[in-house]
Image (cartoon, rainbow, N blue to C red; front, side, top):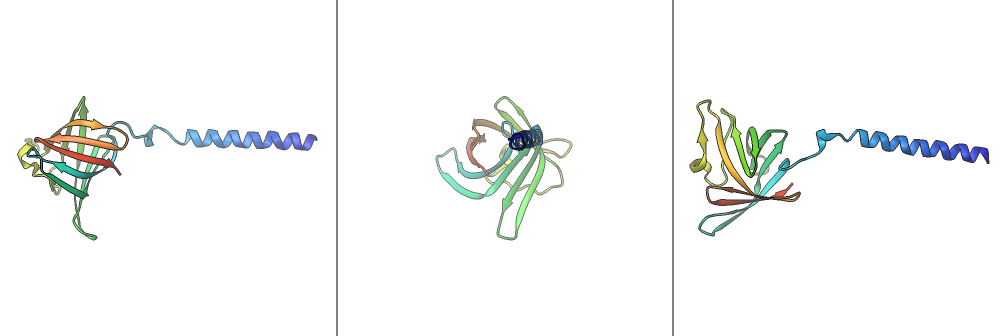
Length: 147
């Protein structure tokens, strides 16, 4: 009986040790908060009520870094990078100068070009949860799904 008791203690210790290692290795660096994550643009709803369905535009937000990707074909894409800032329901994305800027819904009208060459897009966050994101830009509603 003593050997079985000893094996039980070893097994319980190994399980507890494994759980401690598992949970300690999952730090906050990997936890997505708020708008963080990758989002796929699924639909653009224009001010006149018309809609455009898409599946080739992606926004990525992680720790202040913004990435914009447009898939043009199986082997061709355009991308922009920059940084973002959230203040309440206002999301400001600053695209860095010298990178390709491709806009899915004629963003030129709402861009603010700064002296340092950055281009700012200012969105209003209409709705956001763990699986859906709605951003308003120039009277257009951009609908995303978590990717």
